Amino acid sequence: MIKWFAAILGGIFFRFPGAILGFILGSLLDSTNIKTSGGFKQVFSEQPKVTPKDFELNLLSLSSIVIKADGRVNQTELDYVRQYFVSAYGKERANATFRTFNEIIKSREVSAQRICMFINQHTRYPSRLQILHFLFGIANADGSVSTAEANEIQKIAGFLRINFRDFESIKAMFFKTGDHAYKILEIEKTATDTEVKKAFRTMAKKYHPDKLQHMDEVYKKGAEEKFREVQKAYDQIKKERGIS
Image 1 (spheres, rainbow, N blue to C red):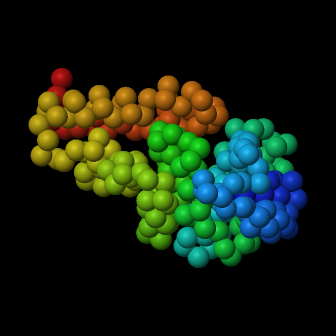
Image 2 (image 1 turned 120 degrees about the horizontal axis):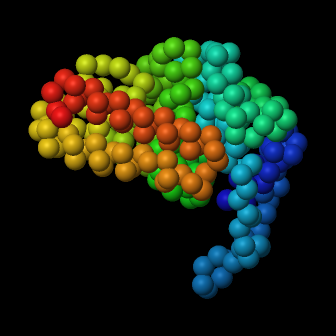
Image 3 (image 1 turned 90 degrees about the horizontal axis):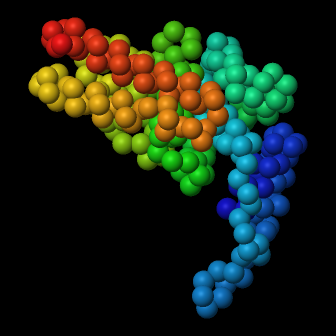
């Protein structure tokens, strides 16, 4: 694991060449682990501290996978990611971050599975749901989510250990089909009115912005967007059924 943290830190400070150098040095440190009767004795007694920049780099890497999913780099989608970082961290920091992002976009090899392993270790489930919502937002920035983009996001969702019903719920917020309101609430069209009301309460609790108080302000805004989609889906079903 040392090699991946070293690669992340190298990328932060020295862009893509630094990430490669960090990976190499980290690999050397990994190789000096000493096996003992109690397991493996690490060179460092503590793992490197995880910083917000670590998450930025990993989030950018996942973003690049979605942007390149349909075989081209769409400027509208790039602008969406940039605006996200401007909103979250301000223009100066966003500009510095995007210099790294440009290198990531050019890179051929980005492992979604390894990135998601890192994210899984350091985030809670509600935060990973927000990441999924953000990735769909990128894909939808040009007006529609392509099949290739949806398939790539579904792979990432699997690596993030997001269950299928939650994936379908968030996907339905971007694919407006005849039953998308029911998918958002994670129920079938055959559900009773009582089941619809119960599903709404469950989903409203799951996507409540208060669950992301530990995250950046822009993540909270994303949670509010999901919360509104749940409310809209419930209102649509109530209107269709005449539920008071």
